[in-house]
Length: 324
Image (cartoon, rainbow, N blue to C red; front, side, top):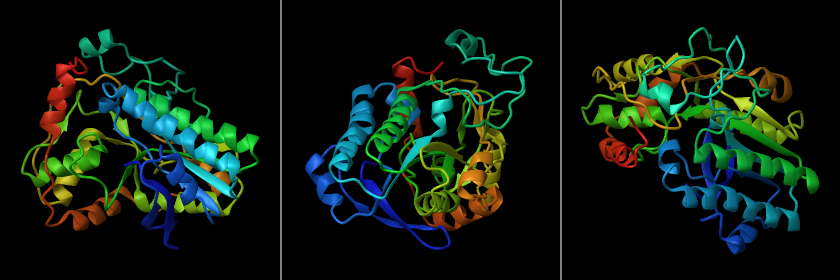
């Protein structure tokens, strides 16, 4: 998606249809969209770690250049507030109790050494250094930093929300590079097992779109997080194996996941959110438990038949040497 700039949010935190610009690289369209606009929420982005590794020019153009086009327009016509969707992907590996082990090497992955021996994963705070493991992560870091830098220069209060794994009704189901829950749902609804990379014991943080929408509203309405990058997650981690099993039970398709033992270049082992700063600066508290959010997702999925393109996408990554 390249077209979401100004979403509206209900009082209960549910997002509704955004005002649409089109391609954010269209400077004239962006300037028109900013007419009579008080605040901007910048969600426009090409998504997907794997695809970014072979569509590098497109991702850089859409995410980094597109953001620069928006910021040039805002420099001419400043607004009251700018909130940009950043990403947990900029952390690379999450935080560990024993310190920073660095990033996994390809040689380590080829030996099927998934974890860092002697390291225990812990919630990742905003103070963790950036470690950009994919072109997607690099461009999301570009978006975050460019917005914060330009906001400070032009007197526009700006907040970057580092979103963890967002899920919920309305997400794309037929795009094999979107969030893992959507990918798993697409497989299950077509009677096929979810494909799980590595051993499935990697840990992630899944946050409901309702909580995310509420975080954006809080950032727009308050000033406690101005000039900062802030995590938005559930504050809870779950393994990919457990996630696949829970989703299968929730949608009534108890199909055991296919644990492939393969890896993808750019994937990290563990990353889940420390949301302490969001509590402190935004007054944000995650409200939607994973089980409840999954039930809502299952209701929305009922009767849908998404096109399953996972095998096609996986084959493309393998052809380019990005899996093993």
